Image (tube, rainbow, N blue to C red; front, top):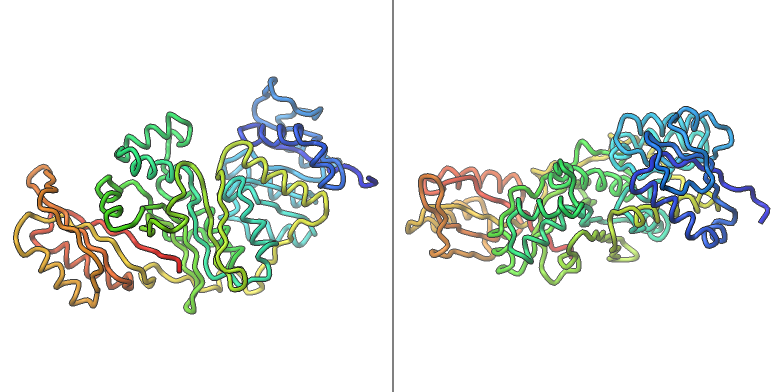
Length: 433
């Protein structure tokens, strides 16, 4: 091999940073063969030294400026996390003429267009395979395997914490709070789990996937986002009785009117592949015009799965075959994103109502007045719930496809009925066919 080594700096010694060093050490011979030259760690930078970690002969520093200023470093691996410091490191590294690889989906979703422009202007690589779905090579699928295709839609379970909680609720009968506490005890959820269970993490990842699939730029602030915090065991059981499972999905769909971008709990038919993805696993499904449906499944987080994707980017840079993402000439704000009020999908409604005759008939009339067709109904008189002041029973209705704004109007009328005792639960239904 006549090529000089690719000299890199690894910034961050958290779970992923340590995983990168371990993968580079353990698989050094395979990596060198596939890269066509050695990948050499010149510097490791971190806020805190970790004497127990093998730095592979690299120098250690707490000074990120020394990384940026070092002319011997070809590529900076940003794994420090957070947003402000990481954003500054990426920008200054690109400005200094260094390739950048990062696993930081938050800064990509909010500033990725600018990073791509900076990299393109300097003929540099900005790699982020590890930012979405951990070790699943979905970015590579969009950049290479499906690059000849027109993408119709991308959907997936892209947050392991939420998927673990929903799986525990479905399989063990745990309520949300108990399942979350277990996830935290096992290290699957942070002490503050809001980014995961609230859908923000999934929205970051969906932003990146949609940008690459449709060339619309990073539009994180415009992703419609709902979390799983209000889901109950009853919702999961009623969904099961109707032949569905509830999953927390990110959905990006190209339509004749524009692009849908949304993250929310979703009823999926139980026979669909995504419905069977359980625990902390992730899965992304892509529908394209030539390849049809393709599914990518695996570990969506963790030190070594994410490190696998980081090192894959390093190998691409070393080989000179890393994708240079194109930046849309029209700019990211010119693509039409469809407001959630204008999407169309079937809906699950859980209507908490007094146990009185005629309530279902009045609810059905309101839906009919809005041209909303009912596909299925569950009404069990014995399923009585007791709140502070009164008992109630759920009326569960599965509708056919309806425009969201029409459903919103119907729900407002239903909630105005004196027999409806609290807000109605609405969960969207998707079939992906």
